[in-house]
Every structure is written in structure tokens, then in C-alpha cells.
Amino acid sequence: MFPMAKKRSARQAARTSADKWQEKQWYTIRAPAIFNDAEIGETLADEEEKLEDRVAEATLQDVTGDFSKQHVKCYFRIRGTRGTDAVTTFDGHDLTSDYVRRLVRRSHSKIDVVHDVTTSDGFTVRLKPMIVSERRTQEAQRKEIRKRAREVCEEASNTDFSDLVLNVLEGDVAKEIYEQARLILPLKRVEVRKSEVVSEPEDATETLDVFAPPEDEEDEETEEADEAEDVDEDEPAEEPEEAEETDEGEETEEAAENEDEAEEVDEDLVDDVSDELEG
Image 1 (cartoon, rainbow, N blue to C red):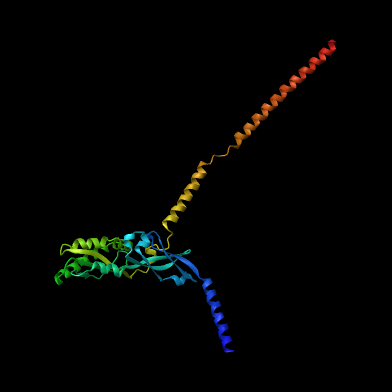
Image 2 (cartoon, one colour; image 1 turned 120 degrees about the vertical axis):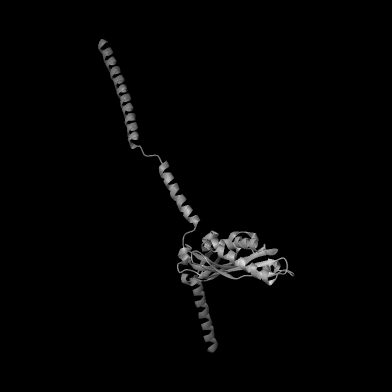
């Protein structure tokens, strides 16, 4: 009796699980507009609200197609849906541990910096630059390098959030730190090892225009509207009056021909009658 009850409960649980799975829908995860809404993965959910705040991971190579960026891991936070697309905002990045280990060798020094910056549109981002020197460093040198790295980070934050993200991922911030720090001692490499969004304004999704349609769709709609206008302009206007005039002209010509034929028949009859009378 008890084994049968267990079998029934197991079957019911399996059916319930299958029903829940069928209710779920696939959503395509899209990177933010600054990455051209690139597809970075898919996820399942039975309700749109359950997608919010999920974090998707993808390499910068997956997002941009640049093979040299495969060591950069990016994190994107889902903010909502646009149709069957799950739209996201940038949530941070870091470098793979293998890549970092390859940069740091014996007789080199690694100087880590942690600095929080606030962008012009109210986002607070934590940047973690990493400076690798060609030789061992002294404490005074490390202190001066950290100071200059923080100054570069502050200067880079004098823009909006999207531009800061691009400047970090494309290496512009690291290049500027390198130019400033190499005046103190020889350097091997400078990288922004990690970044993360610490806080954001209440209207973050509106500020970043998260739910706006992709530019490609807007361009297609504009092109279709322009093509429709061009077709309307190119179509020739109907000219019913000229057609009627043509028909009237043809009827007049036919009537004239019929009258000529009738006159010829009448003349033939008159000639025949005259011949008979004379005979």
C-alpha cells in the first residue's frame, strides 16, 4: 500500500514539473545599446518579473567579436523585457585569473589600486587598476603611482556612465595611467583589472534608455516609410478624361467611315435605277 502511494506521488510531481516547464518561455538576453544590442545568451522564465536582476556573463569577445578581448569577462544585469528580448545594463567586468598570472612574473611588482568614482549622470563605479612594473618597487614609488592612478580615474569619470564603461573596456583609462606612471619607474603593463557598479540613480533605466528599440529597427521603419512615400510619388496619376477623349475620337472615326460606306451604297443604287429606266 505504501509503495503504491509513493509511486503516485512521484508521478504527480513529475507531471507538475513538466507543466511548469511548458509554461516557461525563452528570452534572448541583449547587451546594452553601447554594444549594439548584441545577443549574449538565452534564459527561461514563466513570468517576466522573475527575469529582473538576473546577471548574465559573457566575454568581451562574445559582445564585440574582437578575439583579443577573450580574457575580459563582462557582467550584465537584466532590467526587464522588450518583447521576447531581456534587456540589460552593464554591471561590471574583471579579467580572467590566467591572464593576470601571465602578466605578473618574478622580479616584477604588482601595484593594485581601488578607487570609487561618480559619473556625471549619478552612477558610482568602483575601478580597480593594476600596474605591473619591470622591477621591484619601493614604497614611496608605489604610493606615488597609486596617487596618479586615482587622479586619472577621477578625470575619466567627468563623463556619463556609458562613456566611462567604453573608456575602461577599450583600454583608454589604462593607457592614461601608463603614461602618468611610467614617469616614475619602468612599467610592463597597466590594466583596469576589475570594475563594478556600486550605486546608481533611481531613474537609471530611463537615463540609459534601456527599453528603447534597437537602432536597426528604427532605421528599418524609417526606410520603409521613405520607400512607401517614394512609391506614391512615382505612381502616375490616372487620366480618365484623356481616355474618354480617345474613345470619343475612335467612335467619331467609325461613324464617319460608316457614313462614307452608306453614301457609296446609295450612289450605286441610283446608278442601277437610272440604267433600268434608260433600258
